[in-house]
Image (cartoon, rainbow, N blue to C red):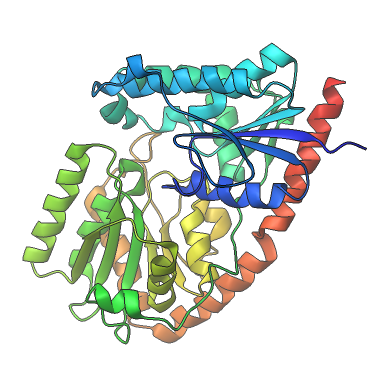
Length: 403
């Protein structure tokens, strides 16, 4: 039997990976390469990987600093991608950036389109700050693709619920839950401390740690407010990167400076460090903090758990399927003001977040127990071989349904 030929379409692929969706694609592709005939089609420059069949950049005519031009540039890449995947048995896309390419390829070549939904545009209205009118374009592309896809992969049960709530025309039978995975060889506790010491953090002192992009979704502003509620001898280390807009970056830098000036134990570093540095910081933290207001899965929580680190996180979305309250960490309730997840009482949420962090910083034995239980949970539920096998089963099912 000939191997199934799969075209995997993505914006991010190593070495250009900046978010959880990119990490997901990176590891999924590595597993799939030994199971199917895999061709990766990615945005950007040429890649050294043997799995990458082609890369694409936006049309020159769409290169502009106008915010909506980015969305139009994405559509131009999708058109080229759709042309480039002819001959595939299945097209699998990730994020709105590539979804439209998969939808068009399905129409052009009569092949099934599988799309993995890592987030939903209706639940990220702050993207309008970044894309301007392009947000309406990204929302249209997502809707057209998700309503027509042969199968939609939700990365958690709550994500599946959101898909069916916001896109009621989608047949529930077409929405499968397949979680994100973790490379437990890369993400495991290490004794190395060089990266921590270079940041000026004492690894022998309890500290809380956050790493993530500067976007509204990640709730960094509430985390900075929470730092005011922490003990002065246990720092909060915030490693932030890739602001969605210059305004968001400036806003968070100013808030961090104000929090530090008020005497809060905050270390705020703006950087995109190598994975080895993040693993060190996770391994030696007493607690990892995830203050997201919207998180379909929350991969970084599983990465922290794989490093045997206790987690304090918002009780939202897929986080509730990753972190077990009172077993692998603490889930902090977040009463949302609206469907976007913005806290109804930001000060109360920040205070509750700070109290949960402070409690674990003061009880390292409990934090250690949570950390050990966290790694055991990751090994049991979130390994890549099992996730890739489920994905291939889905490919075969949709391919058979098209025959």
